[in-house]
Image 1: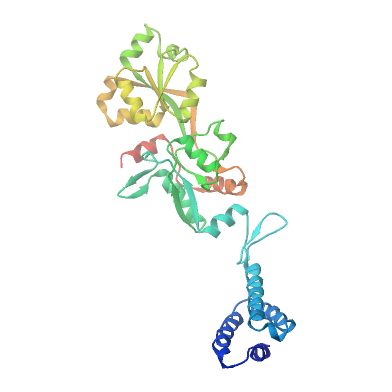
Image 2 (image 1 turned 120 degrees about the horizontal axis):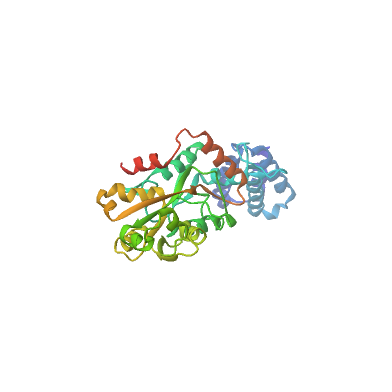
Length: 336
């Protein structure tokens, strides 16, 4: 077949001046012979050449080559089946989100730009931490690389980043809230923490007037500091409806206001609250911790609402993972 095609080309292109062109065309046609779909492609090319008048010459071969390229490309592209799965070029059937991730060769993970050790932080130019370990392990399970998107400046920005499709998942000390659940899906919790108050002893004593701590907390109507655009900015409205809420850009800013007596309490998870006293033993002279045993803060992995199969994969990964986290394990990790 290839010999007759070359003869036809030779008859179409006359004169010694066409020799270089003929050489290039022959080399391009021979390249198709070695391809997986060369048989079908060359058959299409030969048909196109035979049906074209001799006066068409080289343009006929160009058209034939274009038809062959289209045939090969179409045959090797992923195909969506009637069940919604994607058949990859290697024959595997995958849910669309996995076809996207594996086709790209990397899992894109949304992580807050502000370090939150021991969950995630830059150490010697490398991103490390408990959440980073989670993300890397999942990427390894999928046999792809991991890329961290740290464009988000607040926890709510992390949610928005995922909701806009700029990441496959979010692993970023992310608390599950009803508001966030309207735009992204959450996995099962990988860490459960109690919510807690860190109190300024002097300010709280002035507020209590001899009442017990539980009694004061239940009807708390003094000032509470929270990190802006965090889950606690939402929790505080429901948990302490009579409180005077003050938002600060960072947790460090909240602590500065608490130590200065600008606010009576700071509201966050028990890990962050207990960590303050652990890092500075003298802080207990000024501050005290109240753990709210009936209120829980659950940290989970965020997934796009359309990626149902990916959410199932994440949940299965978490259930099979041998490393289980609790507040003691997190506090221990913070020491290293």
